[in-house]
Image (cartoon, rainbow, N blue to C red):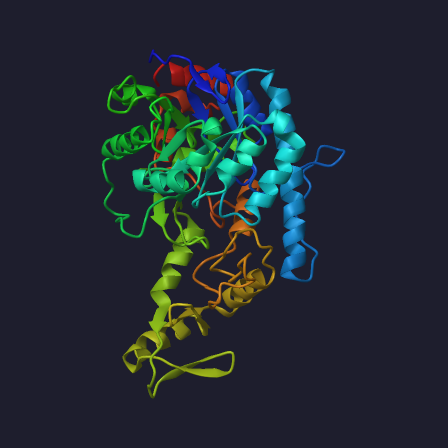
Length: 458
């Protein structure tokens, strides 16, 4: 048994074990409420959250608007309804215990509007807001307006310092803690900077010490650091508990909390999760957000990676050219044999990229890419795949065929589609499902059983 004293989170003393938020439709009101009922801090995701009809069936998020702006309004409507729905379910399921946090992604489309409208209708159900994937400068102001605590997700002391100096220092009363998410271990979008090598992880203990020193310099000694990314057994983190250099710490479980009876994808995802081996999770920069992200290296991810192998630079002048939408585009003549090979293998369509290159895809892939780009529903504040930008309407760059529609594929993987052909975000320790004796014989625990197991140290 690992000794964890109760800690103050969002106005109540709870077990300092937090459910990591996972959108789309993975961390929901049921999982959040169950985690809170077990005495911890539950988290539901408000990123494209589900809402339900009178028969308790999920309302499909179908878009009918002819323009992007019309579809954007539909997305906001879905998001607000879903967030309110999941908040109310979480409160009911919690039985008044624990804490209920809502996770949002700062770079999701219309984040500030969606967050505000959900809190206007359901702030009595929500004790804290967790936010990452971007620099949430407006988070503290919005949360404080509704008397709700906020918890920024950062991956470095430098990021927190910038947030605090510019914004959070103005809203100290409701800053509840700081979530440190290891960018080399966490699932989903990670805070890896362009100055850091994705292939060379930096010691997370040293980064945590650096973060605590920065927090202490702002007189935030009494705020917890919530350690996220790579946390599986608490027995492996005992040196981080009651550690003078780190101060107050708590622990967040994102990937491990997928396999619980309350999680809507647990049964469908279990065979895939149990089959994973070390190294099956890949960190790439394929996401349309431009951020690094970690997901299962499945057929979808492999297709995107091999697509980049069929990329050829555009040159100013060359006797060799390819045709893109009827326009002749000069490419390096030394690549002619390679291009001929692409075409002979069915990759006969050249598509422009914003990197002054062309990539070769099949006619079917080209049609699907262009259709997905055309049907953009503005789920991000800025999308390199479709070139949507919520501030200007367009990023001003060519849509990037080397990426993908993230809303479409995450909705698909969360609602029963083929996990080989769609994006599946998980942390790099997901292979441990198949090694941990707790999950032998395809056992899926309740959240209470998982919490008991976690608090045992394993």
